[in-house]
Image: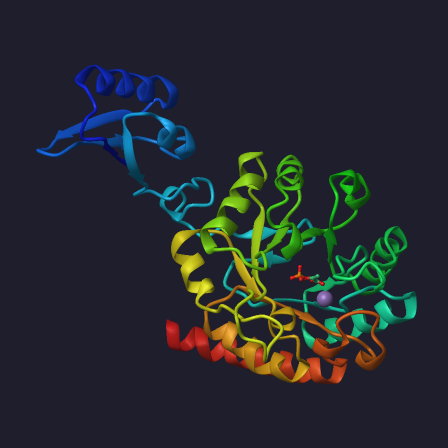
Length: 339
Ligand code: PEP
Ligand code: MN
């Protein structure tokens, strides 16, 4: 971190400021005295340095970070890829293409069991399904809640597929005990109290990118979970808000290689929420594979026209069969090319 001091800062003020930096943050400080102003270079772990505090000091003109503000999620401090392994053996981030598929919302037993069987047969290794739904309108279907969680567990029993489902409240963490991967949705990416509590549990967390968040903010949210001791974080790119209206969101596929460069955490792509249109899902799923993603999350519904949420972006099981075939074939070719 570089701190430029004001031209009129006195020698005494500079000495005092340097001492307080050393005491507060346990860093060493290099000093360059220029003609116009003095510049300080902080050396050591600057992740703890509070930029607001530094900026608020009278002697400070401006500051610039030269190191990322996240540490546990940073590849610099953890060069090897993180591989997340479930007690049931499924791995995410080990080079395989993992597919999480299922309906936006769990609607009833017949629906979830049928979709679970179909996505498993097509090659998905996780069943997704929302029990608590974050809907824009309070009058839209809000999910089956705890009954939905029970239905997901039932579908897991039938198929053996581990389940991924979204949490919205800290108070629900105990209720999610039997869930295999807890999803934090885009709307809660910066629910810091929720992230802190999820940092205390020993369960993989699927952290979706916020609707309008930068990659750095997303990694800082991962850092919140990891700072609490839970290193099992999977990132999910699901499209961001832009001025484009032809699609529900804009799928930022460059986020995948950027994340891979900056972080060791696995990253998957959700082309369903990114596009909002089922006809766009196959092409974007394939593009996600070519971007180097560790997996995909795809919405599949037995009867999209009558789905209680996100029907327009949901694939039928038959369409999913076709996409799964294509993405696995593409992944094989991709691995060959990238060897
Ligand atoms: C979902 O996965 O159903 C969902 C609500 O996703 P997102 O948080 O990405 O909108
Ligand atoms: Mn959805």
